[in-house]
Image (cartoon, rainbow, N blue to C red; front, side, top):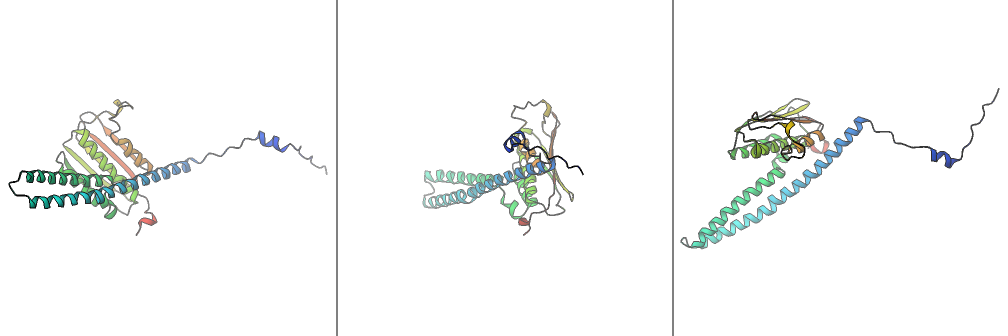
Length: 257
């Protein structure tokens, strides 16, 4: 039986220098999941920092203002009623009260504790109630309860979209009525924020202009990072509708207790 000839031996260094080693590209699905996880981690880090700042505002700055208010109350009690300085002290106290209220609002906007303590719907009701007190627009609210427990990241995303959408209405829309509708299925959470304001033509806005940003970019990126989507529909004199659709994921183990 005829033997097969042995292959020619090549110098090892020569062989290695001629070969090109390339990593196989990651599957598209895996690459997308890596991007989603990276975005989620970034959002988690940012939200943790916002929470820290909110606690410092609420606890430390808030306590200092309460102490100052208490001292002013003592000073007013010691001053004669006809003393001119008494009116100035009263005005200073009123200013401190307004400052305390504003700090509480800022802390709530940064990271509402009620969202962590009681969940999405109580947090939304509290926020919408406070927004209604501003008196700028009439709110029509429909908040359906979720059909199953959600991941806290989804709850936070829904809250942030409502928060940013209403801020846009207050600053830009010149609306008289806003409708907030939150709907759940077993697989998705869907949110609509509709206003009857001046609207705009999204196609007519140039990339360099500031108006298209109006928080929409951040809202869309947050939804996309969680595997969802966010669309904005608007036209001049026809109001604006923001529609977000987010998947309801299983609750992580560290959120079950």
